[in-house]
Amino acid sequence: MPMTALRATIATALLASVSTAALAAPSASVFTSAPADPRAVTVVAKGDGVTDDGAAIQRAIDAAAAQGGAGGGGIVFLPAGRYRLTRTLYMWPGVRLFGVGRTRPVFVLAAATPGFQRGVGSMVFFTGNRPGANGADRGPVPVPVPPIRTVRARPVA
Image (cartoon, rainbow, N blue to C red; front, side, top):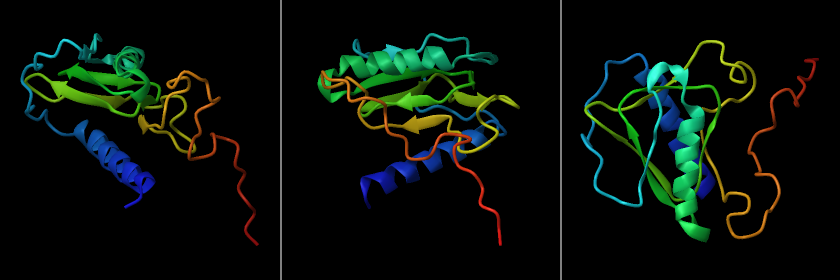
């Protein structure tokens, strides 16, 4: 299976589990406490389902990626809770996000969150290399879909 197809499959499975997890009862976590790893980054956010925690989670992901050097990588621990997102989270290559605590963390997309009603809106986006990760900025990160509102519908004949 090509890497692009594999990423798409993983992203689809993750998003399916995230959307149904909000409706399901909290499930037990495999990691009831974070393993001792001095290099791991722990997300510091509210996790109350009301506060927008997207920026805090992204900061932790970025910090873990920076620790991995030019090759990227790193571990992020996300404590149990309900994390409201109002923006897409970008998962950089080699970064692993683990839920820790008695129950698994849940991502929540509030109703009518701007940017997720039209076109393709992803809560979690698995990316390629970060701009500047190898010491040189390669410009904007390529996106596999056109930006929202840039594709017009063709009239049906």
